[in-house]
Image (cartoon, rainbow, N blue to C red):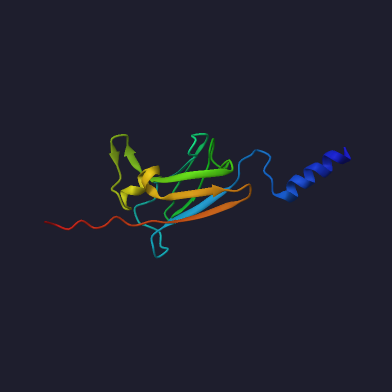
Length: 136
């Protein structure tokens, strides 16, 4: 019994999460560190290059998000992830207008990558707003 108590205490001191998932929070902002109007309801998506795991988080009005894998609040397994940001869809056929460069909607073009550590994690993604189209 003493061994079990010491083992559990060592896990807590090491910051280990016994579920194997760790808290991941963050923020999506523009180049000046400001939230981007119109991004609320969009999703940050993490995917491991080997396809072992993927996680998602919904972006709030202030640009913040919290990632989950199986259910809200469960966190993300440690490892390296490619990241994309998907705009909100009103229904399966109708997406919200793009407010950030569309390159962020694909893992292969977003340029965003993270490494989730076995601890509480925070990531800030500075993204480019969509460039205004000029009238002909």
